[in-house]
Image (cartoon, rainbow, N blue to C red):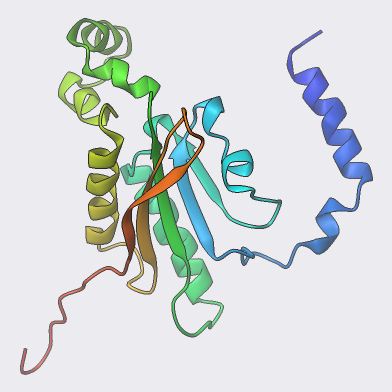
Length: 186
């Protein structure tokens, strides 16, 4: 029996339920877009109590703000802006965690072997390691705030989930991107 079969059984039970009836289009109920790690110990539905329709969630190795993550935030923010909503659009919550598996990328031998197998750049891989999640989440919040592709109407916050305590600590409070205005008299 393939591993996915048990999950497909759960899907059929979900499809028979009325869980989808309370969705309200594309706008998330919590007005939060979560970027976090693919680690199964960091499931944002469990950790943050998210329900279907509460928030878009982007998961990648380390929960890093990559070029792809910036593209996704830019797309979602542009899509929401076209709906004609006034005021702030949503908050992007970047969540890194303790004991992250990307920490292996800080080990030169591991990184060299992985780069050799995949052809990925060793320097870029070293930069992706989450060994100090408070520092990397600060850097990623800064990267997202500085990205000219994202809407100035979003805010970005940074957090660290502690696997030992189960608590999420805020490292960077919600901040809006600061855009330099170019125009006459500036």
